[in-house]
Length: 336
Image: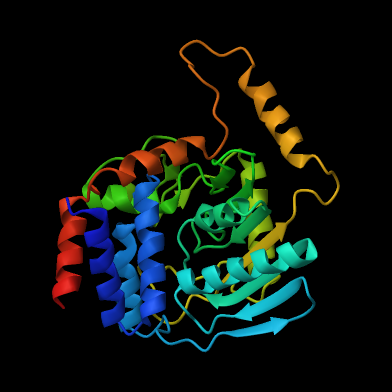
């Protein structure tokens, strides 16, 4: 189990070997390691091989000429030129934060990007700078629209982050499927089962086999409501931004016929636009909820982001635990 700094350096070196700039290599490694440290390995090192394969096959541009079109002081449109998603999204959230600090609110849309990891990674950066953020991105087909037999919508995460007046911001980062697709892929890699009730096989039967789930359909949260949310995210991050949409986002693991052209949308704004005592009010809000009577077995009511922060603090003090097959992938990439 390599130390965090060591494995991060190895990942940086691997991205450098694929032609990424030093700055971009560091940025990508940081995002992948962060996913491991917050307890989301489905978006961490298990995806490194995939990113490298896409770089090798030139469907991710290792030296993109990213263009920013300023529409107003608060609004910008980024053409990421098929950059790796981490690079495009970091540029986008940095710009959104800067514009929101200056103008109160910011809207940044990105097209021609790729998978950018955890949405919460970007939203949290805004919240830690005393801003509220909404992040949207679409994904390859995994969910069938309500009433349809074929997948079309991605697991399309919805992310919201807000400052709380403490060092731990409120960060809600959730896919609109019962389970994110990355967890199913990790289960397939490790030969583990997934829980019943989250996916169907290609014949429409409930399955606990992750490989059959990947060939079948993932189930949305809340039935038709989840399907509607997936559609909403597809409109916001795909139709609205100029990115692919309506089932056109390519699967990063299986489809190397061209770039993904994923779209991202960042909405960032100051929390005191309408009230001067936001921090007092959010602290009161959280206090009221935490004081509610608890169900049997529940010791404490947590707000979204608290458990993630605890995992980050805990895992940052330990060695990263990497499954042997993923560790072997990293070793092979490092050798090559």
